[in-house]
Length: 54
Image (cartoon, rainbow, N blue to C red; front, side, top):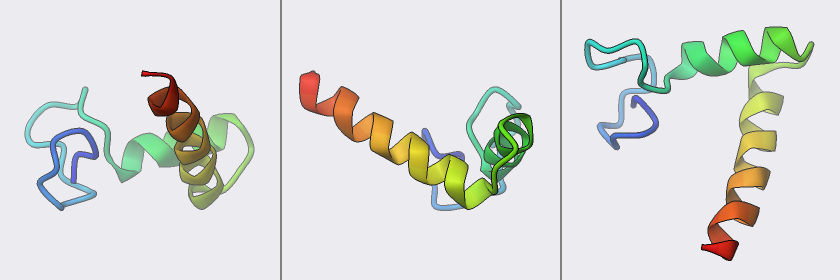
């Protein structure tokens, strides 16, 4: 899904490249020299911390 809309399609940016997709994580992973799975995992860890505070 574009991870931020909930459509359930991880590769579909819904026509707007600003939406978060698997490609977003692939590019972020390359920048940090990690795998896309690692980038998603670290993102999840941080989101859990942030959401707890809200």
